[in-house]
Image (tube, rainbow, N blue to C red):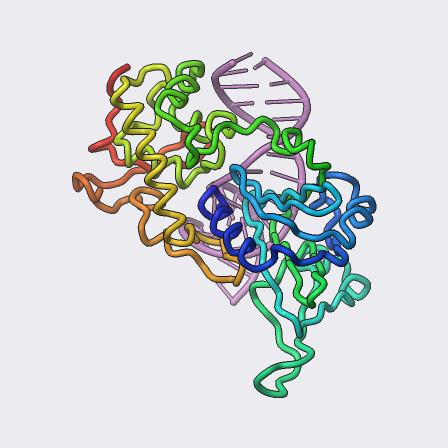
Length: 312
DNA sequence: CTATAAACCTGCTGGC
DNA sequence: TGCCAGCAGGTTTATA
């Protein structure tokens, strides 16, 4: 679920809170979460590096580190980046006591001091499934949590950013994303619109939620062929993509299920979706009931009233 | 190139 | 209540 708006929202929060901080050490609790280099080298290389800048590219969160390093995080399905304040400690005793539970849940957390009372240990729901921890020099910790373990954290030399991003397409909220560039990339594909929007090489950062929302905004059927659109339709699609993503960022992202921001808060955009998971509800534009279909093995939501399959 | 399936994982929901 | 099948926002890799 972290798609472009969710990653962008987290990136803005990180930029405001950790730029200038130093990463003392990194702990890895599930080694396969580290995609590059191997976990031992990762730990060694990242130690004592300073966070110089925070950026986003597509669904990737990018941290420029001192030492000419680039830390890239992709949250895939259920990954989250959370900031743990000072005063909390991490209990890894489960690793030996119950390896199976450890593998699933990761470490537990307990509070060592509390500004309000002498409440002793407590446990935070949001910090379960912690797969990696970056210990900052000021006592704070950046946690990467991910129940399904699909997320990936990688460390690259900065000049290898292109390799790390694996040929991502244009940023939909940048000036390089124009009606003309969209027309060109659609014309050279022969697939359905839904598939094209999900293809990170066509446009960076759109996932299942915003693909459906953008197609609804443009009143285009998910099964339309990419090479069948008129110029007017491409203009509507371009406008729809930009509008849907921009609005979602303003709402703090869509928390259908797992997404949380840096402080563990859910986003509000789920209250503003028009078709995603709205099966059986009346379309806000024409009143027809929203339906669901499978396109390229992906759940797809649309309004059969105002997203008709024409122009073929 | 396009298409399809499977793999990587765990939690949740719905049906029986 | 309990169990099991099926499903979930993403990407990569293998196979046709």
